Image (cartoon, rainbow, N blue to C red; front, side, top):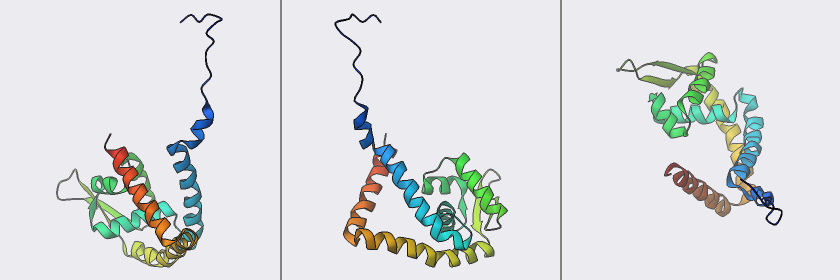
Length: 154
């Protein structure tokens, strides 16, 4: 495309990108993840592992497909995370009734680690709740839930 000297290419205002939802959520997520990882280190797991262990515990024996939907994770990433938990002896992944279905369950060791991690998670949660106030935290959680719905509905 030819531009004359009279109409130079206008440089976008990249400053507005600092208000980007994705950028700010990633920045926030890194910070929040560091807090939970630091708190959960005593239990030998990270925040992402805690979340998956809780999801598996709450859903009972759960298919990898269902777990991917619950966690809003692609199956490849979830499978990698589950392999780590399996190597640590925290979960078992076995074939379901249909050989194509794989079911994840907590092992006894996984239940023990989850029990050890829970009070540490409570401390991290309390730190955030005490810092933000119950009302602001509830508003934040509602906003995040709405954002998930909006982005999933595209």
